[in-house]
Length: 365
Ligand code: NAD
Image 1 (cartoon, rainbow, N blue to C red):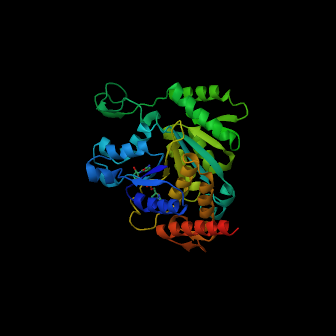
Image 2: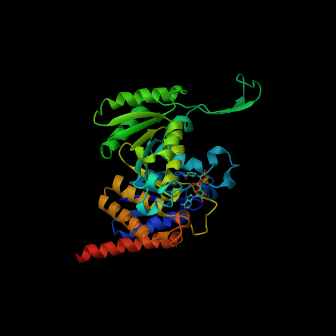
Image 3: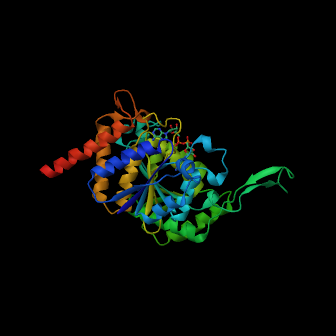
């Protein structure tokens, strides 16, 4: 098994180091190979996704990704900006299904910005379509308006579009995921205003006919945003398009206490995947040693489960994270009175120690 390790920018290298440390202590036989991506790759070779990095990602069984981006690159032409690297990887690897579980650990119910009773026991799964929608639709650009409210002035435009097969395949992913969980799918759209999402709703409904054992309901995205902060536990699986999923999953992240807790998996049709925390490169805290590495460590667990067929190793990581939280260790983003504040490295070390302890326990028994 070969894992491509792409740390990226900002806190990316700090948090990926901790996830790699955790993977290594599991004593599984895999090869890890690193390559620059994002701003780091632009600095090194003039492109955010160099061919060698893309080739490594294509050849690997799975990709462990940190984060890319920094405000200092905002003036670069768009194709050279760091964020193009992750968009390029999703496109070139065919990673159309993004899994973002939002689980509120019992130990962190007080770190959520919502009341503890609203988030205690929260376990929802957001499935975001990742290679279509307005983020990839063509044409896009800037031009002089020929109509609209201000003809003759400068305007910018993007294209929202979804094809039938794109919607069908993500709908299948969502219904199959729901079968392994609570058996309910909420499809989030904006069918009341957008043609693209009326089509989305129609196709999801058609696919649902093949899954009579799964309950389907539809919700407009504005209502879904409201329900996520009003009564998040009413959801089981949410399936939605690229842009709505981007926004809703960040909102869901806060339910869990911090965006630093939220892992993600982006899968192709064969379950080969790219695994990354749901957050960005957090330039505001980069280099300070205070970033929460748990989302990345939990992403590594998802990688073991989905792409590398090592569910027991994934369980060991997740149990270790839970043990560390039970022991009261908290990075600043999830810290609250009465808990012990630690930095990125100490948090990673603690997860490693917890794994080592259970390994010794297993060996003894
Ligand atoms: P962000 O997720 O990087 O940060 C938002 C806030 O959350 C910041 O206050 C940050 O300090 C905090 N935060 C994020 N991760 C954290 C962690 N692990 N521990 C503790 N706190 C954490 O989003 P942003 O500030 O909007 O974007 C920063 C850069 O990241 C931009 O260049 C953006 O384009 C990029 N970005 C990249 C990805 C990706 O690589 N997949 C995703 C989103 C944003």
